[in-house]
Image (cartoon, rainbow, N blue to C red; front, side, top):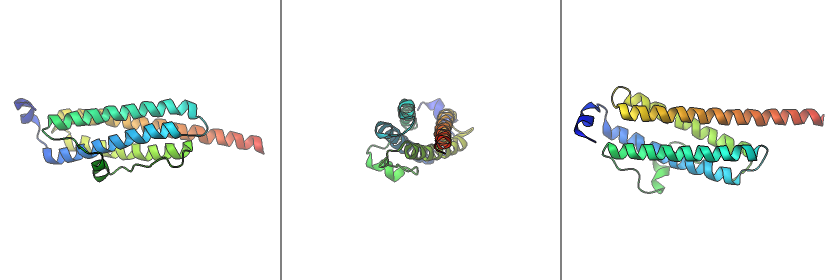
Length: 170
């Protein structure tokens, strides 16, 4: 980070780097959870939802790039070993052992809610103290909120479809 940039960052950088490395770990786990879940998913609306989950996966990967770049700009080192992801992540990784679409969506929904908490914390921590990190965090936060909304909408659509099918069975 340049001299002038260092002057305007008035945040505890060590604590921020810890928060950012946790976010980085969570992004890598979210990327893989979305990607592998989309690949093995079964059930109604799979063909419509699979490409959207792959898009979410790519967005999570993009978040990881942004976070890693910011860690380096702040003079830190991004987590170097995948085994460290689980040590630093507070968001769970749920392997898609049950490939049913609703299970996959619920797993991803929990991940998004955890990510929303993480980026809200980073945005709050950096507000007025580190403008670049704050801007990055609010940008990612907006996308995580959008992901949560998408997943909630898909779950609602599947539930409505199931209700309609029940009407025909009666």
